[in-house]
Structures are given as structure tokens and as C-alpha cells.
Length: 321
Image 1 (cartoon, rainbow, N blue to C red):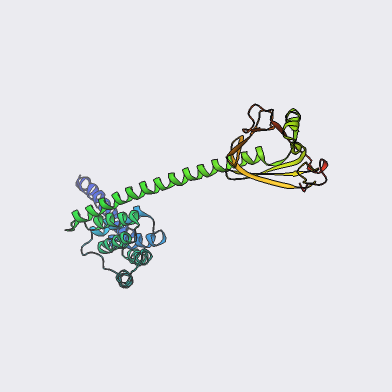
Image 2 (image 1 turned 120 degrees about the vertical axis):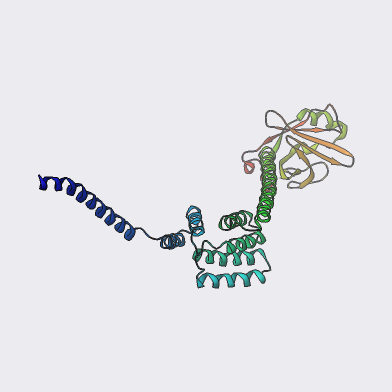
């Protein structure tokens, strides 16, 4: 009975002691494998240096550093980059110089990503460099790293001003882009119209109709030999049209074969207008793709008809085109 009574007390006590021993071992093992906050901070910094654009990791570093007392020390390398940045900022003369100063602060912040002062200075550099998005991000990190800063309101106002500038800048860029696109569309339309004019008018033509007009006025004026003009061509430049023609036989003026004459006018779509000595001559491309010469000096006359020549060389041996 005595041994049995002692066993009733000893067995639970041994079980409790075993649990305590196991728990103590687990605690010691965990303490050996779990890094301290400062060790964890250094691990995060090393990771950030391999991925500087990892904003989530940078935020985690800043938040962890805020829990440490005393705060982490600033490495010597970071202080050297700060010196370079301060010198570059002081002697900056252009936005590019301020960007160079910002690059030095970026390097310092890779070594000490929790340093609030460098984020503020980085924001000033980017603000001077007219890089508003980067300046805003730097100032926001400053406020995160210095939650109790006395200038919190002022920096918040700076962020608001930068966001407004960015909005205005975006609006100006949008307006400029729209203007450039409109100008491009206008130029394309002008090119299309110019190509259409070239397609309608350019080439070599020959008078193939209007014999009644010649017969009607030969006896009256006696000088309608230009009906026999062989080749006519039109050259387009902008809205200016040049008509050049070449005779393939002599006329009553005494002009021999091969005589070349020209005149200039203006073209708008399917109509070309020539004005000389107060008189107007209008040429129009009809629905058949022919040119009708409607001379305003002789209203009601049957117009000359020009047809496009597919092989100019087969119709005249004296004209150069």
C-alpha cells in the first residue's frame, strides 16, 4: 500500500517535469533559430540592396527600426554619400545636377533605409529636379520614418503642392499631345488631299473633244489652231497648279511644232482656275474623268475635252513628254 500511494504522487510530478523540460528545450531552440530584431533589420537591409524598388520591404524596414531602442546607427558609408549629396545639391545649377544629388541620397538610404532626414533631403532634390512623383514618394517616406516630426503639416502641404503641380503638368502634357495629334491629323489630311489632287490632275493629257467649238470660231477669230495642241500636262504644288502644253504642228501665229507654253492657276478638288489679264478660265474634271475647259470669256461655248494619255510617246514625236 505504501509504494502504491507514493506512485500516485510521483507519476504526475514526473509528467509535469517532463513537459517543463520539453518546453524549455523548445524555447531555447526557438531563441537559437529566431533572429533578434536588429539581426532581422540587417537581413531586410541586405534584401533591399538587391531590390531597391521594393517599397513594401522599405516600409517594413522603417517600421521595424521605429521599434528599436536605441535607434540603429547610421553606417559610415551612408554618411559619406550624404556628404557627396550635400555638395552636389549646394553646387547644382540644373535639374540634372539635383538628380545627381538625389542619386547620392538614394545610395545613402540603401545603407540606412530608416534615416528620415535623408528621405526629406531626397524629396527636396527631386522637387528641384522637377520630378514630382519621386519627390512625393520621398516626402511620404519621411513622414513614415519620422511620425512625430514637428514639420509634419508643412511637409504634408508640400506633398499637396507637388500633387497639384503634377496634375497641372499632366493636363499641359495632355493638351500638348492633343494639339500634336490634331496637327498630325491635319497634316495627314493635307497629304491625303494632295495625293488625291496628284492622282486626279497629274499626268499627260490630249485634247480629244470640242471640234464643234473650233469649227464655230475658226471663221470668226481665225486663230483656233491651238485645238491641235498635242500634249498637256499638269503639275500640282500645294493648291497651285501649272498647266504646260506642247504643240505638235504649226499654227497661224507662226509657232512651229514643239512650242511649249505654260500658265499657273489654283486648284481645289476637281476644279482648276486660271486668271490672266482680268479673264478667268476654268477647268473641271467631269464624272467621266475627263477635263472640261470652260473658258469664261466665251460663255455657252462647247468646252474643249482633255483625255488622259496612257502612252504619251505614241501620240507625238515632237513633244518631250
